[in-house]
Image (tube, rainbow, N blue to C red):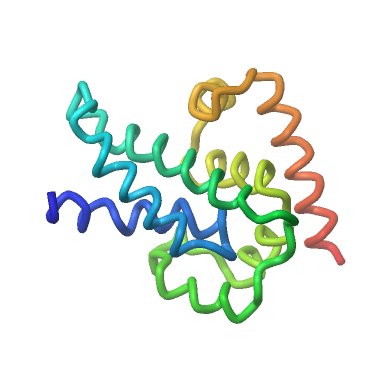
Length: 152
């Protein structure tokens, strides 16, 4: 179990950091606990990463929503998180992380799932348990909001 958690922790952290930037550590911890608790229910070991992604996104969104008001994450906290993100080409720049932190959690979530995970609308709808049309509208609004913040 320890080996599995060590293996999935970087992946979980990469998903949690942009979805719950102000509470990344809590989101990672909650996600790993949920993975640990739910592992016996995993029916197909080959689908482990997809299952971990579903659990992680659900927990990261839950942790991000716990905040009574959505405020931008502290820039120092965001900079600290860069140590947790991978150093390869998928790493988000500090500016992009800052822009993501300014978006509502629903917008951050669909952008992360689309741009970092490469999921289509149908897969995101299933993962988030919302209609596909809702995913499309959230993604459109998220991209629009991101562009507006980016061009300022």
